[in-house]
Image (cartoon, rainbow, N blue to C red; front, side, top):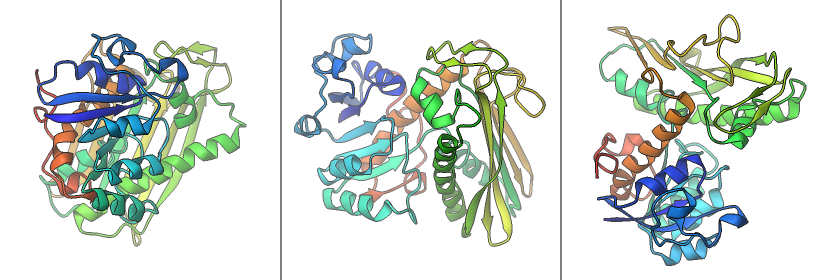
Amino acid sequence: MIRLAQLYTGGVGSEIVRRLDGHRSFELVAVLVHADEKVGIDAGELVGGTPNGIVTTQSIADILAARPNAAIYSGMRWDVELIARLLRAGVNVYTGLGGYFLPGQPEFDELDAAGKEGNASFAAGGNIPGLISDVFPLFLSGYTARIRAIRVWQRNHVSSYPSAEQITTGLGIGLAPAAEEQAAVVDGAWVWAMRQSANMVATALGIECSDLVLAQKRIALAEADIVLSGSGLLVKEGTVAGAQWTFVAHSGDWPFLTIINEQTAVLGLGPGWRENHDEPPWRVEIDGEPPIVATFGWPDGVEAGAANSLLNVSRAMNTIPRLVDAPPGCVSVLDFPAVVAGDGGAGR
């Protein structure tokens, strides 16, 4: 039984707390919250589940006192200091935000040293990065050879996504088109994340990623006020209703990886944008021998934003057993066996 701490209770964290009730592989031992009004409450009741006897806290000291083997970090920002503290205390950490593939990144030395000091491991994942921009194309690469180029798409519709803050600060949706400074922060964060995906793909393929650039960005504006069903966010007429980034990674002068990331509050924004839910949200093309094209998505009737959130929930829980057994320091999917349901996510 793995003693697990859940750090923060947004859309992903709340679902993890609900799923841990009576789980066969995990024992929930501590829950960290951000908002003052969430402190001192039974964690199960807080997330609309069964009372579980775990009283929420804002104190990392309380989390460490519960002696978890592992923690899932579901915060709103990349918190290197907090993650390092957990690792030094011997807590294995998984995060869905930041640190996707750290070799070569400025944070690597600090977090790798903290993990080795505490004999704990750190890994990250998600859907982009963590799935379409790295893990899935690498899985498919095992079925071809002589790869000349990889091209991947995420076309994510966020109307049912539960976090208004992440939609605005992470995607730029709802911002005025003249908010150039805020948009530059969003773009910079995506470049940082996509570079880690490119580095992971390059490492797995045995090449060097010499650079990753934001080759193009497109935005589409709302033609009328829109209230998003999942978060209640008001996207005003004339503000950003969709953003589409194209990133290109090079190995020398070879553009080996192209990543297109589309995030929309409204479908059918015009030519070149996702028109309807029948179009698959994910696509990978590998120019190799043989060439491969793979698409996947959700069945009819499934709300995409909510499904994306649950995807991240499942990936986090399924990864924890692999992470606990991984070597100390910063690791990735290249360092442990393939993550599958059943390690922490199948049945009860």
